[in-house]
Length: 316
Image 1 (cartoon, one colour):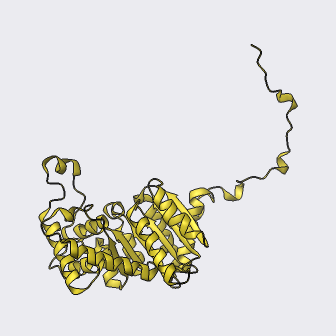
Image 2 (tube, helix red, strand yellow):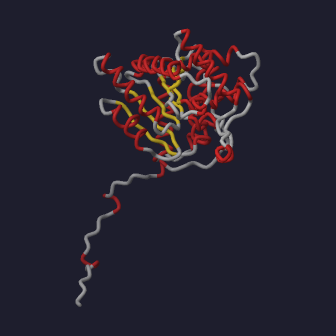
Image 3 (tube, rainbow, N blue to C red):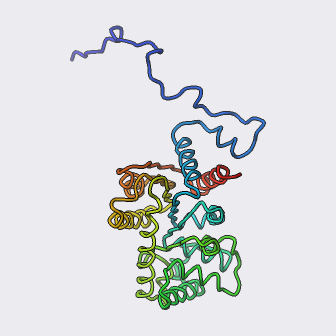
């Protein structure tokens, strides 16, 4: 058999001066200098890829502060890895204008505030049928939901009120629900029936959770117009629930608002990249105008970088 080989001596080369480069010295990382502040650290990151995207989100949210809505959507892992206090500070500073969380996030938040701990050993509890069967969590949270239903309140509103009215709290400073209640920021909870441990308990009332969650869906749709022309929606660690709920709530808002809101920043922060956050938060909602960003990394690292960067940017 006869083999043909490419003749490399006949190749056409081009001069370096004529090539377009994506990286130049101005984009490179800077080593530590005399200024060791967090702002200096952030500025020292290379101006490429995820570092550039992180700074884009920080700058956009800081600009939106006090002018446009900043909606933060949260999955359970974000709360149980200890990030509630950081997000609570952004609530207190008026950066976050609405918090929307899935059912797991609400449970972790409630347990940390009420009992001072959360995140059980699932494998051990599953083996003997005690996973998710803690008496106090099921009884108290289900009672709060039934009370919210009777009062015509939303799910997030009702759970936050139950925490605030509790006789003792082991860790109130950890609670994002309490931070929202304290500072008058809306908080909604968006569960999936059967997905959360409190649904296993005898006090679970499907009608109550359905009614209060439906109200929270309408409330989320009601705040999304505040995103128009410069706001931001951040999806932190929710792979399915919040991206799906957000897409439907955005449809409602645009149906009622003549195609608005548009021209906002939509960012997804998660440990790995998932289909629904990419499509339902980052790409589809910004087709009519706006910026879509995905930043990949562990919540316990990336969310503090984001929060510290925003607080640094809005500091006097």
